Length: 111
Image (tube, rainbow, N blue to C red; front, side, top):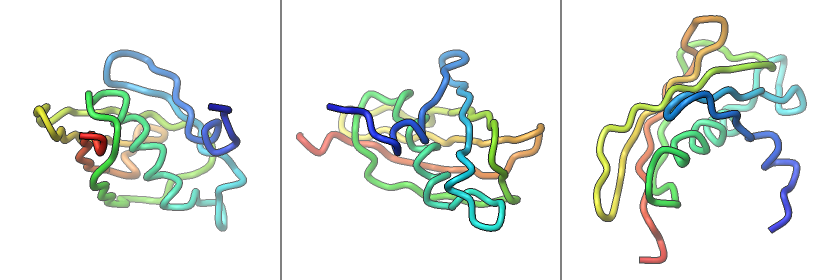
């Protein structure tokens, strides 16, 4: 599969087993703030790296303060790994301040 622009925009650098570095792209910003759905996609990408199932079943975000274009750190906390579903949270921080917290449950839709 060819990598597209969106894949590049949600790309992560893995810092350790549960921590990632991302860069919120300027072209996803509205009045200087990255689009909320775009931020959720970045967080879901990080969570997906930490869970065995490949498909997001549910993704919920709580926007705590406005993010900005540029670097962001993502920390994933796995809450439960199950045979058919797994759940984790992701905290996005910029400049030491948490901007978004996301909870997601992943499954394998092929099963």
